[in-house]
Length: 393
Image (tube, rainbow, N blue to C red; front, side, top):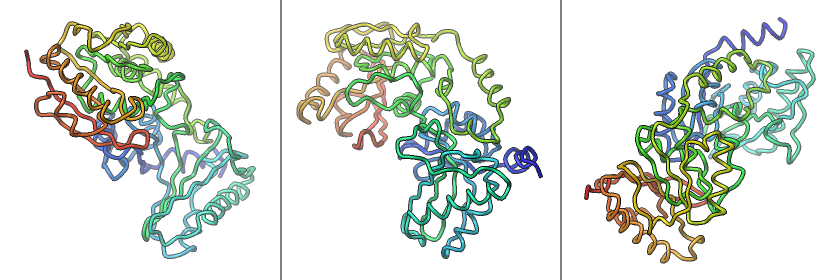
């Protein structure tokens, strides 16, 4: 059987199990995204969300998911009694349809109370199984990826051992999905793009109301809001690992991208105000927005939130206020939250608020009615996302 026939049979024809990795706590947000994409058998699990579909389903997930970190194709999930089980499963896939001849390949192993031991040996054995398969079908085997090689050229195979089970998965994303490609300049401790988008989605933002980011920093929240409002895919300006595969369906991928472009709005339908009191920071936000293609959708201006009147609303205020090291102490961070809460209650009656909090108990300082909370990791910390509505004046 020639390679093209193997690709059709072993890559294009099957319905695959997929796993979308996301920050713990955001499984519900990510699952809602997958369901909105029309993907099948969406099932939240610890640290991510599973779904099923053909290759195009993985393409769509990578193109459109805003809250996820990466998308994995599950090649095998099996019971492990010893080495023989691992070796047998590692030899089964038709690796030639996924791993390009001579490709830089990295095998990453994670074990949790697993029957398998010795991560280094596991990586060597699985790499060897891939290499032997390509040699058997007359193709150049992969080479070990070198330290420092960029994710744009390295293919990754993940081996996970947990208890008496193990899995083999291919990373289809390459660079982490938060790397949209526009944020080349950042403020201190900025939100990752996927966490910023998750906050917006969790707060119910769809671009159908005004939005204000009064402490915008490098502009991540405002840019992600514009992408949502314009219905632009977050992965539209970057490359993915699956484009390196021999089984890559360029025609299907091109169709998905053209369909996304046709469905995009020409402008955000409601104002998106991005403000910051620091001029250089604001200019960095402007450049990031320009790279994302949404500069015209943002009203960027230099202003101090605590001394500036509210714009015409109501709408949604999004806040990622400084805390911890950025303010020098927890006490100063709390004092700022008190001042922010007073200003919100005085000037933003009827507005909704979505914020990132250093401590969950600070949510009451904002004066929100029936607030909702979600705890997620951020920058080595556990922070709380809070969302609620301010009472009308």
